Amino acid sequence: MIEEKFIKEIKKYKDVIIYGYADIAVTVLDYIIEIDTSIKIANYSGRVKYFTTSERIPIKKRDEIKGIKIRPIYDLADYAADSLVVVATKEMHHKAIAKTLDELGFKNILYISHEQYCLIRESVENFKTVVNNNIQNYHLNHQIKLDRLRDKVKRGGRVKVFFMTHDSAVFGCASVYKAMEESKLFDPYIYVVSRRDVEYPKFLEDVDRDVIFFVERGYKVIKGYDGNGNPRDLHTLNPDILFYDIPKLYGSAGSSYNRLDQLNWEYLTCYVPYGMMMVDSFYYHYHTKCIRETWKFFVDTTSDFKRVLMDSDFNGFNTVLAGYPKLDEYGESKTNAGSTKDYEGKKIVIYAPHHSLFASNNFATFDLYKDHMLEIVKQNPQFYFVIKPHPLLKFQINARFCEGKIDFSKEDYEKYLKEWDQLPNGEVVDQGDYIELFEKSSCMITDCGSFIGEYFPSGKPCIYLFNPRKEHQRDVYTPLAQKILDTYYIANSQDELDKYVLEVIKNGNDIKAQARNKAVSEEFPDIGHAGRTIVKYLEDVLI
Image (cartoon, rainbow, N blue to C red; front, side, top):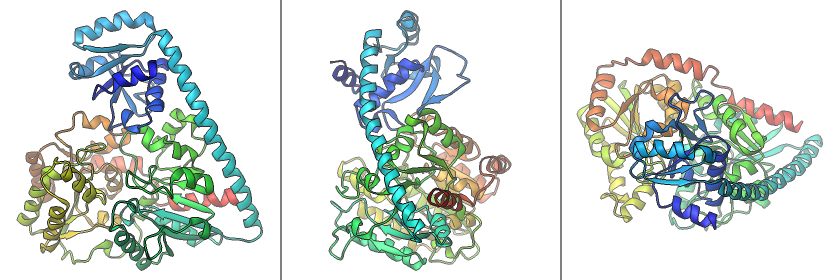
């Protein structure tokens, strides 16, 4: 069968390039995605790296399709030895393409004949018919739930809204919640769950800590578990609308309950991503089955909205351009920024390491820079250093240590954070409410994808750590992220990190400040209204 042979051949290679970018090539990409259901096969962490063409002049109409960038084949010669090129064009062009590939040294080539294309297209269309019919059923069911909720509102009832959050450190709907509090229509609650309530024995400690975090900040909170750690039945709590913030709520240790396909079927769901979409993974960020099943998908920027309209099934029928609620916190009156120490008037430098150690998008450089960063803190008592690690970093460290890929354990990591926190000019911040910290800071050092965008409105300089083990890293970012990165300081090595620490942090020589401020005004001209925009949209739909 072509399906078995095709996927088997593709999985032999770390990198796959699809020659072509028109209908045949896009159909082949859809085939790879739909038949091999792992999203990792065709996004930033997967095999399909590029669409390519023999045209030397860059494509003017589009430079990417469904998150896969289009590049001239001449720019990809360093992939020649080890990648697979899938030639997905009309057969009349195959001979000329073969000559070009041979001249460039490409050895591994798979040609798609017209007959094979027809079989692939039929398979894709059949698969999409089944999936799309299922998704349409979800939205017919949403309409039934919406009609019932409108009847409730007409009778004077309030709309019960749950914000399902799995970690306070990434909660991004504070402004939506606050806007609902000010509305007579809504009755909002924080509903605290865990992504690791099956194989992680201490998950309840994390849940309880998050409950305390939200209660102390005046939220109405419902804990998703009883005293014994058993999940509560959402049906007994009966929310009308359910917000969630990650398109894949549970990982391998996740539960069979609170699955997004079930939640999307039973409730009017709203998806607001927990992080800004800075990494170019179309399928993960815009097009998972659960995103298509959700009632409303609120996106953050105009560029993201346009991408959904152009490339998603049904042309983004459930997608609403609202802005990014977490950025509403810029300029708000807040206190303490989650800090427990006195900055003593020192300039604040944030170190925010990502979690993806040898996994997923493989951005993380913590194993490379952790010791050196601690030395920087000790050698510079005139600055105040806050480490804000990604909440998943401790789990990735434990997994990579067990696999033998790194030589420090979760216990070593905990000792590291304790040492950092005990320094007179050091502090660990590992929960939410970090936008004020961004505003107060003088600089950030990070390798985190979403922080590219979230830190940007602060106007402060950022030293962004590229992973020297990751090839072509810049290509994995969205056009907006690349524009922002042009105003940051990219460090590819420890020497470059030291250079920017000296120039930007110590000497205050921020030569990109003007370009950054200009880009902020161009890309984020109207920050502060996303929460109210979402609430107003829901009010208009319900009343």
